[in-house]
Amino acid sequence: MTKNGNSLDQKTFDKLRRLYIIALSTIALSVIISQILIRTHLKRQENDSTIINVAGRQRMLSQKLTKEVVSLSTETNVNQKILLKNQIKGTLKLWELSHYSLQKGNDSLGLPKENSPKINSKFKILNPVFDTIIKATQSIVNKINKDSSLTIKAYAKAVEKVKANEGDFLILMDDIVNQYDLEADEKVSWLRQLEMWLTVLTLLILLGEFLFIFWPAARSVKSILTNLLIAERRAKKMAYDADELSKAKEKSIRELRALTRAMDETLLFARISSSGSVVHMGNKFSRLFKFSKFNTSAMFWNVLSTEDSDRLVIESIISKYKKTGWQGEVKGKTKDGENIWLEMAIIPYNPTNERAELLIIASEITKRKMAQIEVDRLKQKSFEEKMSQQKIISSKIIENQENEQNRIAKDVHDGIGQMLTGLKFNLESIDPKDIEKSTSKIEYLKELTANIIKGVRTATFNLTPPELSDHGVVPALTKLTQELSKLTGKDIVLFNKTDFNLRLDSLIEINIYRITQEAINNAIKYAESTHIIVSLSHSNDILSIVIDDNGKGFDPDNIKNIKTGEGGMGMTFMKERIKYIDGRFFLNSEKGKGTRVTLNIPL
Image (cartoon, rainbow, N blue to C red; front, side, top):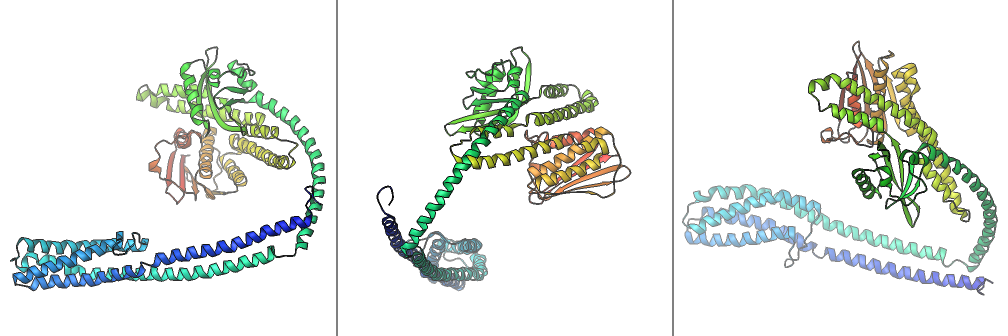
């Protein structure tokens, strides 16, 4: 007996009754659907014979029209000319009506409004021939209407046009009639297949009902008892797993506290609501802007700047990108009046279904930004002064970028970055009472931790390659291609065609490495490449490096704003670096045919 007083036999009977109803309903539904499909298809075929007849009649009408035009050209009697002219008008009217009705439909003729793409394409070829005959015939009729005593010379050219195009019209129209006939046969064939599939479906339904509905009730009872025993074993196992999960959660919470402290001390990190109010602010952020992290009533843009213009810009960015996320540079101002530039990322985050928040992760780039502003200021000076100082400015930008990349690599090692934020909040969301979800989350957290480790190693390798300073550009590029091939799973290969092994100036080697690294990363991130080949060759005067990929390619002429804001300096980054070392940069790409980047560096 069950808790509600029904025996297992009663439950089985109720289950079988429901299955019987489902089985009968399924058969009835399949019959109804079969009839609907067949009747619908038959209705679509009702007009096929009419279409073929009208299309076939078009050939006869074109021949009749040509015959009447030729007869008119040989007729000298005025009354007979007028009679032939009237016959031509009648034939022309019926011919033109049938032609356009075949394409656009006509209820009175029983012609549908739609044709197949093949029919339409054939009519597009036929229409110029049809229009030529129509215009020539109408010109003959119009001339006779104005003066019935005209000689054959007055409309001889129009007659020749009709005769010249009549053969082409017959050939093309015959092709259209054959296509109509072919499509009608295909519909009949499709109907036969439909009937066969409906028969097979019905037999499969009957077989399924026999296997799953009419099976002895004893088997169903045995299955229920087996499931009860299995459920009992699962309950015991779940109780044991719950204890283990509780221990794992306590350990994770301890680790989380340590990670939280590390993040607060090393990252410019904050959480804000979708309206912009501060939910939480890290220690480093609080110290930089002299803001109490326990103050949750302040608006985030008011914390970042004391200037109204800066606040409006930050507020606009948060309002616009709070659902999609954003990454870029913003300007702030501390309470001491010091201007601060931040490279900031806004990440949408939903800690619960009822509440949406934004994660703010930033790094201070004031020195780099000041250098950029100084470069912009210098651009306003005379052309001669700008050219003389170009290399000095480029050197400062590149040195600042290298310093910034090394600092970011250290921050990634110490603070782990925004992936740890996801790890933190996933750990906090573990509910020991929900064993199944908690188990799946722990598996997800293991995978996320592995990705964090992999990401940190990748970032550190990209930022500070030791082979470059120790052994030179060729070993560094070899290591780069090998590591990126392992990390991305793509086939990235380096070929040193001329066994180049010379050491160059350290700045030249750094720039060659960074340009090649940027080109490979672009092929991985944006071109969706699977194979990337880096080739080196040299002569007495030139070192040439070629980066080929088999990606989707693009049209270089359509690139107007090369600096993307997401991928660093992008093409401008590479061009500035190659310009700094007096090299040349060539880009060749075509949609669907991959991309080739060529670097020529003087030795």
